[in-house]
Image (cartoon, rainbow, N blue to C red; front, side, top):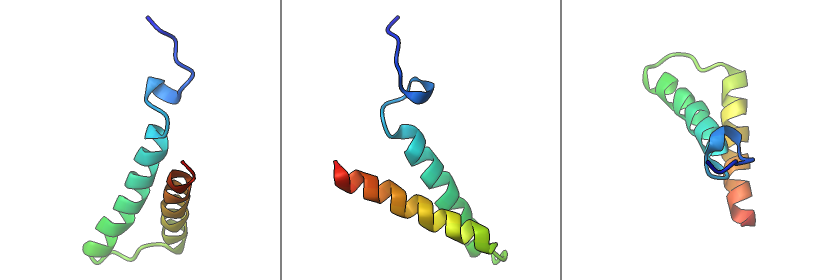
Length: 59
């Protein structure tokens, strides 16, 4: 078995992508269900969205 230094043994960037999808997806689902989305979740979703795509641009 090969030892990996990556988190959870997943390819590089997978954990970051999962976190971004869950955060942004949660905000979108809450908005679609007409549930008031807290300001902190909107800020977190924007940060995750920007960070994820910002890191992808560097590659």
